Image (cartoon, rainbow, N blue to C red):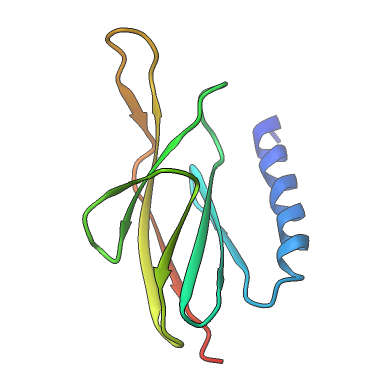
Length: 120
């Protein structure tokens, strides 16, 4: 198993232990981005982590919420309004800015997530 996969797997196992102690926390992972989140009945909080990228570079997260236009997130989290029983959908693209005068950004491609808000 490659080192990156072992590192990611170890991180998820640790996150799973931590998340199991929170009543409404959850986690999901796609190709280049992992999300964890929680619900409080009014607000859904999503934390994003890039699982692969360029060394020594901080990724930029671009988020499309419920099909609305894309937004660059200033950090690694965003919030959404929620109602019990609602299905929330969002997509995330992870981008890294290149360095140098003519450098361009490299992006991972859109990954879609769906979350069912608990009814309790």
